[in-house]
Amino acid sequence: MAGVTGSSAATRVAVVTDIPSPYQVELFNAIDAKAALKLRVIYARNRDGSRPWPGQELRHAACFLDADAGTKAQHWIDEAQLVVFSGYRIPAIQHLMRQARQRGQHWAFWGERPGYRLTGALGRILRSWPMRHIRRSRAPLWGIGQWALEGYREELGNEPGQSPRLYLNVPYFSDLGRFAAAPGQRRPDRLCRFLYSGQLVRRKGVDLLMDAFARLVSDGLPVELQLLGDGPLRAPLQRAAQGFARQVVFHGYQPWQALPEYYRNADFLCVPSRHDGWALVVPEGLAAGLPVIASTRTGAARQLLTADNGWLISPADSGALYAAMQQAAQCSAERYRCLSGNATTSAQALDLPAGVACFRQAVDQSLVYWEDRNR
Image (cartoon, rainbow, N blue to C red; front, top):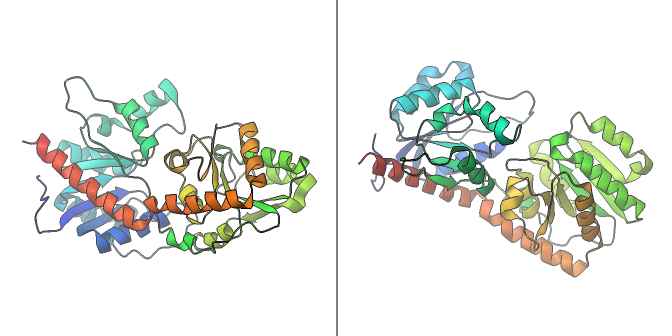
């Protein structure tokens, strides 16, 4: 099934993914409008009960496998010049991936870094079965960030005697303009406000954040911690903050559209994850002009953070987190302006126009790769 790179006809692309998250929807809408592709998106499910995202306007062709759209999905896959699969654990996606591989169709896999549940040799063994169709093919690998690419190279490599697999960096992109609408002047003479946005779970490192913040309070620094999100750690965190409850605000879950306002009222964003394949909150914070403190086990932070726009710290290290937050709380107004300006500039690489161009380039490179293999 050869591609038509260079033809006047719009390249036909089908994406098979899990649910219509707000971030994917806005990217697919932009691709459909701007990338000169005939894009069709096949969602495995309409929603995930654990993620109460609001319904999004799908301005791209879409269907849902859990709504008995199997025939339409198969037709779209049959017509596609490239099929992009995102996610390898969902049985319905595994089935379609197996069909594409057995039929010799042109396809690519697009995913976050493998192994956030289990690292090391045991993790690779347990992933070997759900990843079998990726392993047994030479399909291009689109990593969601450079850290993801490193993980897949370690996981898959190149077998002896096989031609090299194509690895491409295709991170998450988002409409960051809604965050950048915040006013430029920040951090007036008031409490230094640290923001956390995410689930209140251990993997996100929010327990480490509360420990570090407690030390800042003990130092007598004028600080405040605002937490967006909910989860099983909320009650333990509230108990841990009893001695300084006036300096900690639990906002609970907030709808996706409401997030920019909270970013505008903060000074620094904290992303202390023990493991996060990407973490869209990092480019969101940067776009809002917030210097970011994040761990080195966060994909977006590894790709975007430098000493000029934030702090990269060791994971699961409340001492390192405390030191970074202490520096942040005590930085001068001039230093803050520099950090904030650099943060805004660095986020531009992950705005929607860049995403449309990156996706289109990945499609073209993947089709050329398959055409070269079939010669």
